[in-house]
Length: 110
Image (cartoon, rainbow, N blue to C red):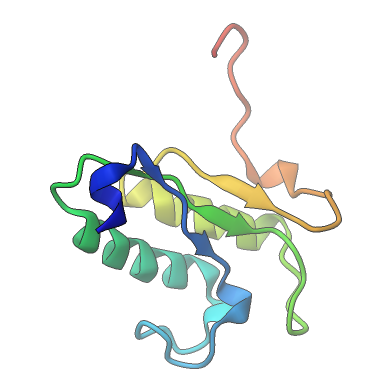
Protein backbone atom coordinates (compact mmCIF):
# COMPACT_ATOMS: atom_id res chain seq x y z
CA UNK A 1 0.00 0.00 0.00
CA UNK A 2 2.83 2.40 0.72
CA UNK A 3 4.20 2.04 -2.83
CA UNK A 4 1.17 3.91 -4.23
CA UNK A 5 2.39 7.01 -2.39
CA UNK A 6 6.14 6.73 -3.06
CA UNK A 7 8.53 7.18 -5.93
CA UNK A 8 10.89 4.51 -4.62
CA UNK A 9 10.63 1.59 -2.23
CA UNK A 10 13.97 0.54 -0.73
CA UNK A 11 13.56 -2.79 1.08
CA UNK A 12 16.48 -4.26 2.98
CA UNK A 13 17.28 -7.53 1.21
CA UNK A 14 19.84 -8.93 3.61
CA UNK A 15 19.99 -12.72 3.05
CA UNK A 16 22.16 -13.23 6.14
CA UNK A 17 19.22 -12.60 8.45
CA UNK A 18 16.89 -15.19 6.91
CA UNK A 19 16.50 -18.81 7.87
CA UNK A 20 16.36 -22.06 5.93
CA UNK A 21 13.71 -22.22 3.19
CA UNK A 22 12.71 -18.57 3.42
CA UNK A 23 10.90 -17.68 0.19
CA UNK A 24 11.69 -21.16 -1.11
CA UNK A 25 15.46 -20.70 -0.91
CA UNK A 26 17.17 -23.59 0.92
CA UNK A 27 19.95 -21.50 2.55
CA UNK A 28 19.48 -17.73 2.02
CA UNK A 29 22.74 -16.63 3.71
CA UNK A 30 24.75 -18.87 1.39
CA UNK A 31 22.54 -18.37 -1.69
CA UNK A 32 22.23 -14.58 -1.84
CA UNK A 33 21.46 -14.39 -5.56
CA UNK A 34 18.59 -16.87 -5.36
CA UNK A 35 17.22 -15.21 -2.25
CA UNK A 36 17.31 -11.69 -3.73
CA UNK A 37 15.66 -12.97 -6.93
CA UNK A 38 12.86 -14.60 -4.92
CA UNK A 39 12.29 -11.63 -2.64
CA UNK A 40 12.41 -9.04 -5.43
CA UNK A 41 9.82 -11.03 -7.38
CA UNK A 42 7.55 -10.83 -4.33
CA UNK A 43 8.08 -7.06 -3.96
CA UNK A 44 7.37 -6.44 -7.63
CA UNK A 45 4.21 -8.54 -7.41
CA UNK A 46 2.99 -6.58 -4.40
CA UNK A 47 3.88 -3.22 -5.99
CA UNK A 48 2.44 -3.89 -9.46
CA UNK A 49 0.63 -0.85 -10.83
CA UNK A 50 1.88 1.48 -8.09
CA UNK A 51 4.32 3.41 -10.26
CA UNK A 52 7.01 3.12 -7.58
CA UNK A 53 10.49 1.85 -8.38
CA UNK A 54 12.18 -0.86 -6.30
CA UNK A 55 15.68 0.23 -5.22
CA UNK A 56 16.71 -2.32 -2.58
CA UNK A 57 19.44 -2.23 0.01
CA UNK A 58 21.87 -5.14 -0.41
CA UNK A 59 23.99 -6.79 2.25
CA UNK A 60 27.76 -6.23 2.03
CA UNK A 61 28.80 -7.36 5.51
CA UNK A 62 29.34 -10.48 7.58
CA UNK A 63 26.52 -11.90 9.63
CA UNK A 64 25.91 -15.36 11.02
CA UNK A 65 29.36 -16.57 10.03
CA UNK A 66 28.89 -15.74 6.34
CA UNK A 67 31.21 -13.03 5.08
CA UNK A 68 29.77 -11.20 2.09
CA UNK A 69 32.40 -10.22 -0.43
CA UNK A 70 32.69 -9.73 -4.18
CA UNK A 71 31.05 -13.03 -5.21
CA UNK A 72 28.06 -12.67 -2.89
CA UNK A 73 27.43 -9.02 -3.74
CA UNK A 74 27.82 -9.77 -7.45
CA UNK A 75 25.26 -12.58 -7.17
CA UNK A 76 22.74 -10.16 -5.65
CA UNK A 77 23.45 -7.44 -8.24
CA UNK A 78 23.08 -9.98 -11.06
CA UNK A 79 19.76 -11.16 -9.60
CA UNK A 80 18.49 -7.57 -9.61
CA UNK A 81 19.66 -6.99 -13.18
CA UNK A 82 17.96 -10.22 -14.31
CA UNK A 83 14.74 -8.84 -12.79
CA UNK A 84 15.18 -5.54 -14.66
CA UNK A 85 16.21 -3.57 -11.59
CA UNK A 86 19.15 -1.21 -12.10
CA UNK A 87 19.09 0.70 -8.82
CA UNK A 88 20.29 -0.50 -5.45
CA UNK A 89 22.19 0.59 -2.36
CA UNK A 90 24.88 -1.32 -0.50
CA UNK A 91 25.14 -1.39 3.27
CA UNK A 92 28.12 -2.22 5.42
CA UNK A 93 28.30 -1.07 9.04
CA UNK A 94 32.10 -0.92 8.69
CA UNK A 95 31.82 1.28 5.59
CA UNK A 96 33.98 -1.19 3.62
CA UNK A 97 32.38 -2.23 0.36
CA UNK A 98 32.99 -4.92 -2.25
CA UNK A 99 33.75 -2.47 -5.04
CA UNK A 100 35.18 -5.17 -7.31
CA UNK A 101 31.71 -6.72 -7.51
CA UNK A 102 30.28 -3.59 -9.15
CA UNK A 103 30.36 -2.48 -12.75
CA UNK A 104 32.49 0.61 -13.36
CA UNK A 105 30.67 3.79 -14.33
CA UNK A 106 31.74 4.95 -17.80
CA UNK A 107 33.58 8.29 -17.93
CA UNK A 108 31.14 11.16 -18.36
CA UNK A 109 28.12 9.16 -17.14
CA UNK A 110 25.89 10.69 -14.52
